[in-house]
Image (cartoon, rainbow, N blue to C red):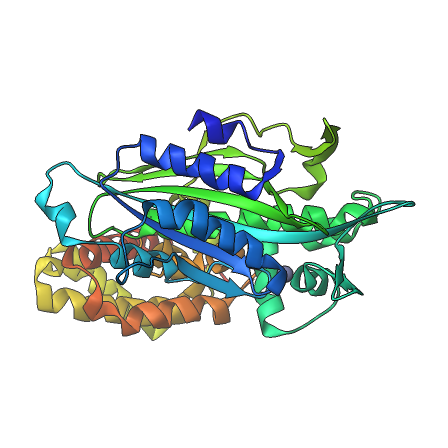
Amino acid sequence: MERIAKLIGGEHRLDHVCRTLREAARSTGAALHGAMHVTCSDESEHESCQVFARDYVRELLPRLRLMDCGAFRTANLGGRHEWGSVPLCENHFVTPELDRMPGAFKLIAVKVNSHVGVLTTPDGVRWGEMKRYGVDSIACGALSLLLGDSTLPEIERLRETFNFEGLDRVALLRDEAKIPPERRLLFAALVQARLQARRVILEIQDHVPLTPTLYLVLPCVTINRPDRDTEIVVGLYLADRRTPEGQVVYQGLGDDPTQFGTALKHGELRIEDAAMHRTREARDHRRLILEQIGEQHRRHAGRTPHHEKLAHVRQEVAERRHHERAASRLLLRTALMAIGEINPVLGALIVFGNGAAAIHHAARAHRLARHEAGAHEARVILDEVHDRVDELPPERVQALLEALTRETAASSKPDSPS
Ligand SMILES: [Zn+2]
């Protein structure tokens, strides 16, 4: 892993990155290899895809048909991780051989590429520009739309990611006093790769793999040059899901574009920030949400008949009726409906924090915790959990009932409306 860590922040040939990743993957002793590649739809990313396929996938992955093999691939505007990809990809690379080898595990490499064009002119380096079929063109076009005022749904999704945990990175990137305009698209691409890799990690943390799995997640920025492309390695996540406890560590650049510095080393670009050499544990966003529940969230207005329903559920839980399988699901539905009327934001934070709401609600849960979203967004989460109560494992239903009744008991005396 040290050899990949050394690549972080630097600009390298595409084949050098893929071969270093391949050697790191081999050195883990994994019995089976899988791979996932996330890229922008832009045709200029074809070289990045080809090199990863040639120098990583073809060397390590099992044959899909007679002679060919392939990575699990996502290509969309900007190169967004699509929710659900991690469980699908992990399931695809489960083969019977692994079951027959005690202690064996598989390794899934996830390469997340954003991209940026560059032109060197007598007036200097122009990031975000390229010649496409002889015509001046923007790359990445999707990130350029993001920094403009596009309201396309896919661009809005990117914007939501760029605002994760309340840091408005689009505003920072647009602010000429903070980031020189000529580096705006380069820095946007760095942030994009980093944030999308974090979304991959959120899913990896949440998904229980079918067989023991070690993940290497490598966010990179392809630099679309007039001749051969190169890439900057943004960071490296090592996510160990070989045991139920699991551990995820990260080393590399952060996600705040105002912290990036650029330097030229032997004619090659280097990006740096203060934390890039420090290995840190990835945060558990469900736990973070639970830790943020405070008195302000517990406030609610007026006593309603729903309090009586919640009091009934609390009584049933106190008498341990929620351990009865059939009763517990009915109680949970009642509790979710009641809290959806009394205090939906608190309810949504509790169900997300306790693992009942899907991980793709992480950004929404953070907005609710920061009071930047209200009842409508909270009910999106609560309604989804309510509709899927039958799919929850019994122990999660019980834990959720205990959390809901405990948290609402602390605030059973309603405040006057404020
Ligand atoms: Zn693009």
